[in-house]
Amino acid sequence: MIKVNVFYENDKISKVSFKGHALYDDYGKDIVCAAVSSIVTTTVNAIITLDSKACYYDTTDGILNITIKEDSEIAIKLINNMLNMLKELEETYPKNIKIGGLR
Image 1 (cartoon, rainbow, N blue to C red):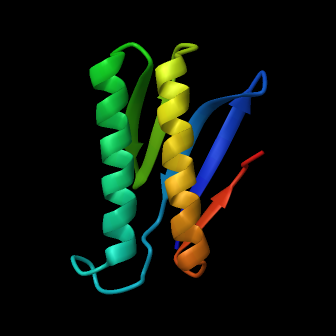
Image 2 (image 1 turned 120 degrees about the horizontal axis):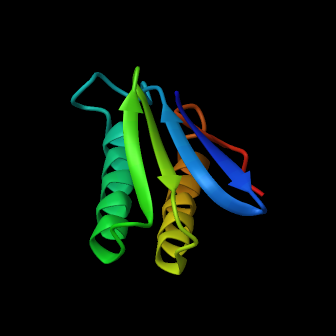
């Protein structure tokens, strides 16, 4: 299962963390994992393209963290859009993706 955790600081999203594999199908054939990867990659690339100082990301031990560095309206809108798309996936594939920490 892919576990997504949303962290807040001063009632604003400060970080989103991703861990795990969807296990919907074999590696390379997993449509849930592919969808999450596409949504997250597109979001991070859009934020960096529009406001390079708004966030950074890192991967350590199979965990992806997206950290919001600045109070960027663009970053917040794009992160919220990403979370909305991930929530739709969670509703369709509840055994494969779980989002925690949403307010």
